[in-house]
Length: 165
Image 1 (cartoon, rainbow, N blue to C red):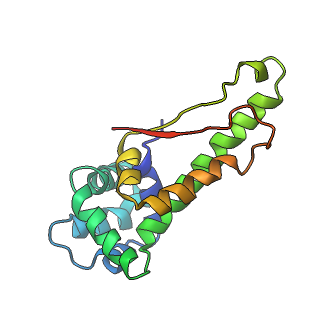
Image 2 (tube, rainbow, N blue to C red):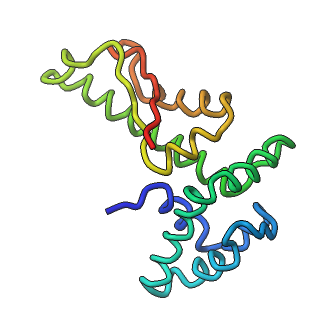
């Protein structure tokens, strides 16, 4: 079973936990020393890996306002954090896969006549909370990945993204 957005962060940061310092400095309000330590040990055992997931989940949950503020400050000077890059890449992949799934449904004769003109796409959990903190232009650019694998003839022309906590 996956662990959502925390899995993206753990897998992306465990080889280089020092990136957290580059991204967030020594932000005292974030559990960075503990997270760096657990990420550095995550490959050696399930306890460290579980703690890494729990701490990354905290960055996306209870520490989200601080995390989002640090990332927004970096973006305001046109410098993306590595954490942001991991998140943006994961959203782009997820939206591309969703669009690919919709295209497969369109090509399936038993399903294609059931596809509506408007088909909402839902993001939920911590991933939706982080997505909501991104600026509107970034969110719009990411949702364009829904159409990358879809035929222009696809019946679902409207794919509004809805966020569920």
